[in-house]
Amino acid sequence: MRVRDQSGQQVSTASDSPIVVFGFPGLGDLVRCHSLIRMIAAREPTRPIDLVARRGTVEIGAFMPEIREVIGEDFRHNSLNVFARLHLAATLRKRRYRTAYLIQSSFKSALAPFLAQIPERIGWSDEGRLLLLTRPQFRMRRLPRMVDRICWLGLDREQKKLPDLSWPEPRFAVPAALRARFEEIKATRGAAPVVALAPGSAHTYKNWPIENFAAIARRCAELGATVWIVGASAQRELAEAVRKEAPLARDCLTESLSTLALTIAAADIFVGNDSGPLHVAAAFGKRCVAIFGHTDIEAKAPINPAVDIVMPERTVAQTSRTDVHWPSLDAVMPAVERVLAERI
Image 1 (cartoon, helix red, strand yellow):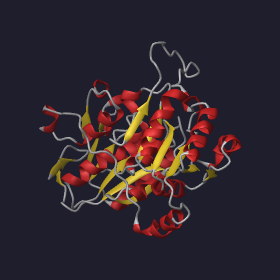
Image 2 (cartoon, one colour):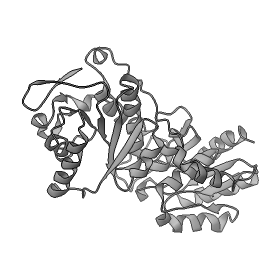
Image 3 (cartoon, rainbow, N blue to C red):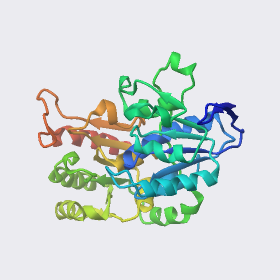
């Protein structure tokens, strides 16, 4: 394969030359990137693929079987971070990548691969990035979903003529290095089906009322299921509110993203908000009941088929993040009971 370098000269891309993918910083959006990674791996199976991700989410790369290594970055939000990007560029240059996929569309996100002189740099042309890319893509906003905008970068010219916008869904696996820890978590679950309940998210405006999650936890326990409350340790107040009404629910919050992913993988069912853990559960193929409020469902919901989405009635316009018309408990409970009945 031949591509053009920064001077416009053609250079060869060896069949075993490494590829680097620059992912999104947020957990859920980073999981979405696995669809593109699977596309790249299927087309170029002999080329190693590495992932650049925010240090807060870097552990999730271990669950993507196609990824060789994950490189952490610490760029501050809304900052150019010149010295940090120069340092990252130097690291990338030493690794001799020949192709880079730039999933974010900001100008600053294209600087490190440009400075690293990676010959083939594929990304969207937004924010005046034409000079920083060798294969710019245009008209990003014509694509309806985030996953469409991510995976479009992996299409060749012929595929773009008749795209069906049907992509491989994220598909996680427990790596060998974490298998022992995974078995330890599984050993704590018992014979009953396990419901991983995630009452939190990265943004409070995405959180379904906590009293509804408590009612879900009580009902699951009545039906014979074990309830694990999953999420970050910072969500302890939410977990305590659930356990006050459903004392049999187990607090499984953790500081470790790897442990969170393993806990979700050891469960049978996931119930939660539009959040990073929802995308992780979907990528593990878990039966999910996803509760959406203000989020644009068509644009941002997981594409995995095992996800049942419960959405609010849209008869009243939602004008702000504080003006959320949630689905009622009566709308969500039957979905949870139906999914749980498949496991009991």
